[in-house]
Image 1: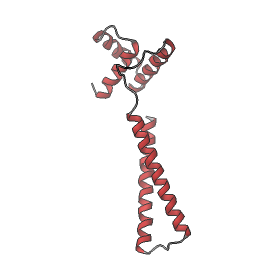
Image 2: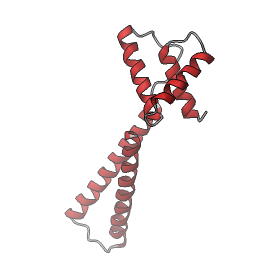
Image 3: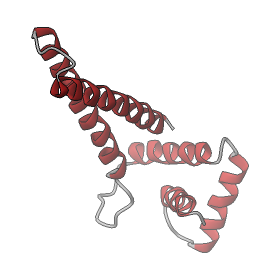
Image 4: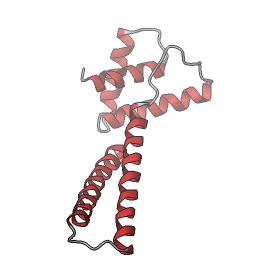
Amino acid sequence: MGNQVVIAVGTFILLLTGLLLGYVLSQLVLGFLAFNLLTFFGTLSLILIFGTLYYVLFWQLRREQSRPSSSPNRTIPNQSQEDVSDSYLKNRLIARLSGDTAAAERLIEQAKQTYPGMPENWYCERVLDDLERGQ
C-alpha cells in the first residue's frame, strides 16, 4: 500500500511539473516571457525536478516489479532467517486479507492439504501468489 501511495503522488507531481514546464517553455518560445536569468534558472529547476521525479518514480516501479519471488535455485536459509521469513510472509498474507487471520490460516491449511511436505514459508508464498493471480 505504501508503494502505491508513493507512485500515485509521484505521478501526480510529475504530471503537474510537466504541465508547468511545458507552459513555461511554450511562453519562452512564443516570446510572451522574457528570457533572463530568472526564467533560465526557473526552467532549469523545472527540468531537474521533472527528471528527478521521473527517475525516482520508475526506479520505484522497477524495484517493486523485481522483488524476489520463490525460485528453486535459492539457498536454504538458516533457522533464524527462516523464522523471520515465516512471520514476515504470514504478516504479508494477513495484510493482504485485510487483517483476517482466520482466513489466512484456512488458506494455508488448504495449501498444506493440496501440497503436503513443503516448508511453512512455501505455503505462505503459494497462498500469496494465488491471491495475486486472483484464484
